[in-house]
Image 1: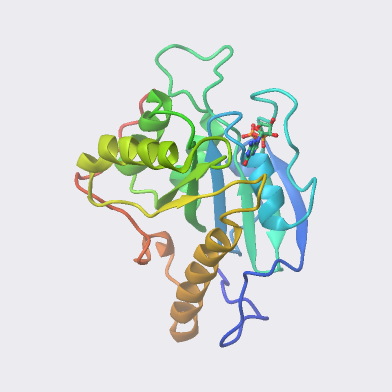
Image 2: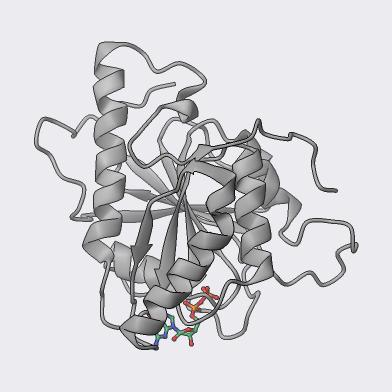
Length: 246
Ligand code: GDP
């Protein structure tokens, strides 16, 4: 597995996106491209503002489609950014037409991707800053914690409600999840409408890429590279329970 980005040198910053190339829309894990590049995945409840945020991050309108209705895209959409890393647009969860009641409320392809994709570096879990903690978001975060999938929390649409409400909703959410961690995951806020949070989120990717390249420059990265410890990694309290919820 080659992780070193040829164009990455000392001081190189990924904060500027110079290219965003669509790779594929994968219906399942097996259809995803090879694992030669680090991947950063974005996921949230349908309508959380994921497509809008991805377009803002990439600086290219239309990179990820802004959905006309919730649950529109069910495929794993993969883009190569700056020829160095991949941005992975995961299907929104929360819409379970046809799913059995005892199944997790996000699709199996997503679960497989999150559990088994070895080049997955970090998941950006998007949450609507205008809402009190939603059970499905809590359920999803707990699922990630139990599988030790590294993630950060990103509260979207901050322009829609007052800053005080945003802070109240963030505090309510982090209070609900705090028992699951020794160290809480990093929390970010953003608004696609006013472009807030773009630099901070890209800086997270920049930081992760720098950490990966520091390791890669010393030695070939081991297969279990996703366990790379970074400052952003949350530390789950409990031993992951690897039983699938379905
Ligand atoms: P997705 O289903 O998670 O991909 O969500 P979309 O990006 O398609 O957005 C869902 C709806 O929320 C659309 O009507 C967007 O215009 C709106 N939206 C997305 N981001 C923002 C934001 O930052 N602020 C506001 N006010 N609306 C947003």
